[in-house]
View (cartoon, rainbow, N blue to C red):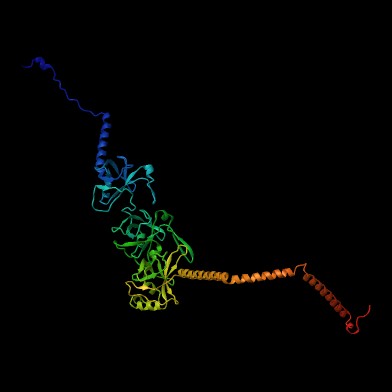
Length: 523
């Protein structure tokens, strides 16, 4: 149908679509979205690797809160804490920062830093305010991994600590523990990092670490010893106390010394396989090591109480050897037991102090002739008391000119040196002889008294009875009412009158000497 003229006169109206205009109200959400996208992109760009660390327990750890630190700098966060499949451990998933990616290697270590109180000291007190965190020690291996086994105790030495590790061998651990100090000239220069039993079970291996620059003082000739407790020594100057530090009394410690060298002389390099001996005390460590020794056996009939293995063998003040073994020896001929003491004599100790004998001569067959001549002159071994308080004894080699002749028994598997009874035992023998003589004297006295009772006493009793009768007769004669007593009194009166007459005559002659010729003058 064609449009009419009326329709054509009506104007055509066009409708345009409305335009979208952004209002101010949309600016804030858009900015927030952009910021979130930027932060997300930044987080993705800064996001580092995830690692899985296994711990025995998760005490103090919290997901999305506990931080991971390296040198007190945050390098990650704990994202998840879960149990292992066998429920024997705790798995901690850690999200590290991107800049911490190069810190991961096969020998990297993780541990939980929390307050700890041990014999070595107190650590982790800062976590009381900041909270528990996980510390990391980067490794040095070129191999990377994402799974680690965390340490239950903080390591005593980190991989970045400068110095050297050394291994010591000892008979026992003593009072040492991990973290125990190592001293050089009474200055702490290191610490004990670990210990363990040797494979054969005959000793203990102790690992120590010496910090730089003190590690250069450790040379192949260095000597290590236990520095725990207090060393007490008694000599001619009195009693001496030696102690490294107060801390060594509690946690123990190790000390070492090295031979003196010229300041211009370079320090010797210690091979990595070197194992040092850890001695029990400083005296043992400083003792000169002897390469050659001669074994001899000493047979004693007396008690060896107070003598122990390692006791010195002394020759006029010089330690010439030591006791190596003490055993019982049964003599079939006498069916009696004796004590066999095996000793080691070191010829080098004597040759270092003599001008006319070399080490070659001391270790040759000529030593037999020398020893035979010495024994012929009275050379003997004797037990002596070294310390009256402790009762410790030692073996003394000396000359005894008045001893009975003897010879060295070279036919034995180990040559046997003749011995001399100890001075104490000799004194005891003398006292026993004196006691025996006194006992015999008392027995003779008892016999004499018995003989007097049997033989002399009856005659003595008869004599006493006769004397008693004579006394009775004399007493009867001397009674006051007897005629004899009256006659004696009259005689005594006459004697008195005569004595007066003689006295008067003497007085007259003294006054009138001529009276002997002319007579007495008349008055």
